[in-house]
Image 1 (spheres, rainbow, N blue to C red):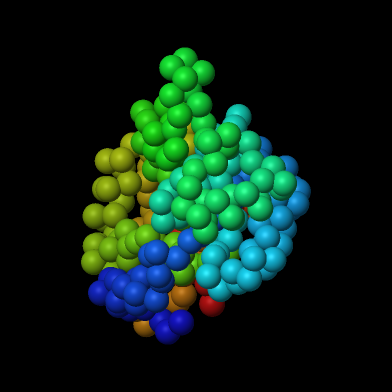
Image 2 (cartoon, one colour):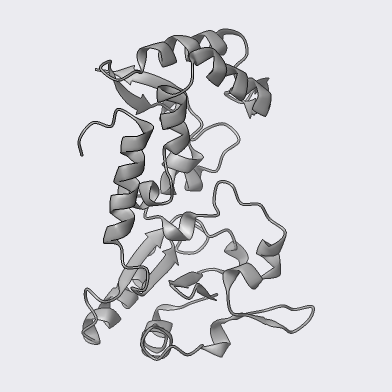
Length: 250
């Protein structure tokens, strides 16, 4: 990918990626969080094997994603473009899901979530009571992102705020936004973002990260998950979870 020197260039890259994607192509998003897979890959392999068996390679995608958030009902999957959600999915369910839902466009009733209080079935993730009252700023887009694919992240507008900060705002304006947000943490001390020495660090770094200057990287303290953050989320979607400082690299 060529160097991006403006927010407009980044937006063009995003649009090009979106245009190449078929919004109607079936995709099975499998939660890869520790609560769902626990390091096992038998569920992933079962779907891949069934897709091959039914000669659907290239017609159906399998995307292993970060945590979907509903660990108590894991392993869970979301099937796009309909956004059908199945819970407590087992490898032996792959054949029925592919045949009936992906190909046949019907619902496998036994795998949809049932509200224990009302008995109502929730076919789509957004209908599940667990999700209804949440504002999922970090994990909400996880089912749409393969953490190994930068294109997936760019397609949903990834790095647009960073481009604005680096290419359209002055360092002092960025610092004021950080302070206004009142974000806390900073290594576990509960300090305000943009305060004290950190503020000076941000200002100095942002002054250098301009087109024609050095490259851009992300750094996490001692290569560990950000303080107060989820280690699983950090590994599975570091671009959204990472709250480390920006730094220049050669």
